[in-house]
Length: 352
Image 1: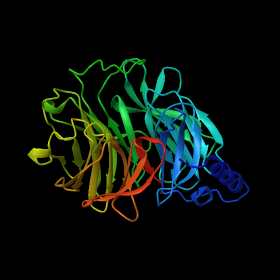
Image 2 (image 1 turned 90 degrees about the vertical axis):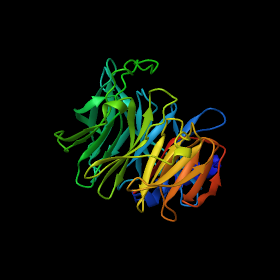
Image 3 (image 1 turned 60 degrees about the horizontal axis):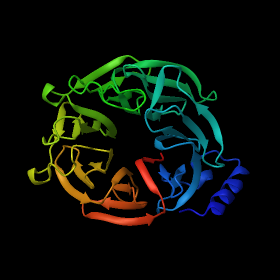
């Protein structure tokens, strides 16, 4: 675990610097939430070697984060259903703003900045009924809330933005109890992938075949000519179904070899794409699968409680696991970058 004096000293030094970019926060390559042995939670900055360059305390368990494209700011989101999103100055550790959804809404663990960094979009649900909303916040004006748009689905989860400003929303399709997350509509769920204009106009809506209507679309990775999405199966556990979808000019579902089809145990926890490859993780199965952008299976990597994944500069991917390890990986296998006395949460977010 990072030495706390080192972290505080780093914050103090960074505070006197005039720079606001990520170099002033130790040039992290990624950010991720984690739990310490004392059950406290924080958002950590991780450098290219796996070292920790900052740690900002969180009031509860985190999930994902959104990194500002220019300023050393990250928005840390509570695990769903969440009522906090903290805008953090990663140079100083200061909480710049505490965002809360309007009455009757809950954050759903994810958010994304517009390509120019001016707007923050947050994945939200109406607490009663789980209808999806995308919150809009003005990152140039102290994160004032500007309004919201329809996500065009139920139970939205990860939201991403394309370089052209379009918003991609994974609508998981699950209505949940607002207090304990109990699924309420598994027999009639209809997940979809919605692409919206920056003003909220629906550009496209993609649904799965009815036989896969219980395959909840959860997480997203942008491709050169489309988007890949990871799913979580809510149907019969004995069934093996595709957990990776690829939407380009057409929809394709990727299926691993028959002898490995059940390895992910119906659950994809995170997804990333880099260099023509797609990685999908399963902490339940203790595996990460690598596919090419056409969906062909290339490798299965095995590690207990592996979940976080993001692109890397020196390898296709970096992974994190619940045992505190940070891994470099390609099709040939996992190589340890670093290990910390932490339990990494579900997601690893690349800076830039």
